[in-house]
Length: 232
Image (cartoon, rainbow, N blue to C red; front, side, top):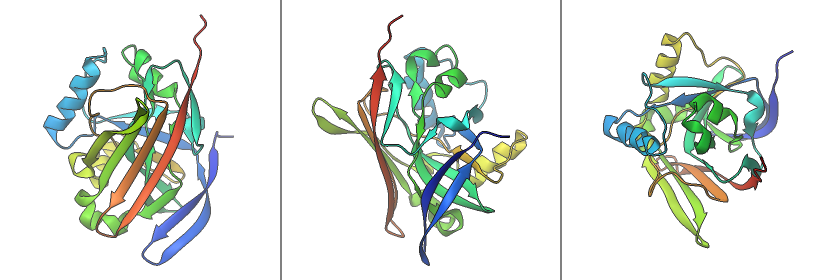
């Protein structure tokens, strides 16, 4: 018997909205997926400042336990050394690929010891709305990603960019197949992020959004980050 996560989701297309039960049995995190080499190097450099070794190649595909996927409004983390990352996500649901949004929340303290371990330590919050990939592929580079954090008593823009700086879904899936992987049924994959404005840092609240200005649609999600005390 395989592990799985189930949740109710909204599927929004040109023909309207439907609700369906989603079952996820495998989660992949696409890392170092920048299409813009300068932006990719910026992200590598900002993580190097906190001791994260540069990747041997790009992109890389990390596995995390499916139980780490979360649709909750709050997650618990170890101490205050983690941070979120807004990303587009791809999910294969009933033979069709859908686009959504999520946060590859990662423990930055442990990250310099091993990225796979650091990613496994944190839940991965996602929004529960998805768009058909085939409806947005034609204008993919116009889609925007953005996140905000709560800092000094106010909301602050933490990331602000476009997916044009990342490998497109077709490119990313091509790399995944070249590595012997597949976005099979009941599989969800995180597609990458953009650099943090002001550096990577902890926040007690993280908000993310994926915006399609062509079809005038937006997917958003917010969650609280609750530190668990480190006692030894």
